[in-house]
Image (cartoon, rainbow, N blue to C red):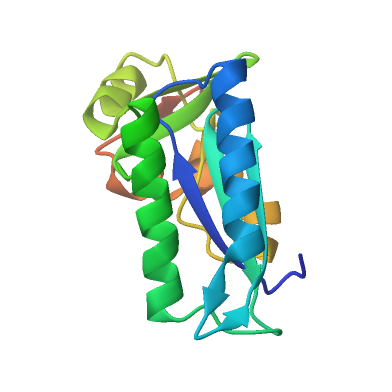
Length: 163
């Protein structure tokens, strides 16, 4: 996908099993292969990263993703939620790296982790609000100090104190 491709990231509330990844990938690849906007095929891609994040991208140079086509993608993702008992639309869940693992919790729980210094300014968090391939490549996995989460938390501690 080109740097200006439009991107949507859906974070699962839990890790997906290998079987779920395979089934969701098959469904997702079928969805993007048939995805259209006003009868025009969309050049799109579908991927699952870290057994937790569903990423859909569309190159709008070929055809723009319209309101109706975006609604189709939302409907598709909601079907995945129902079929696999997932929550993929909770934007207040924070995913972060804990060693080689990816953990997630509510923003208020994350704030508690910060107050306990379990997470700090250097903790890698996932910015699922990115909306282009370029932003995805450079701003999706970032240190907490560079994230939207740091702007809404009351305080975060690191070796230099609270900021």
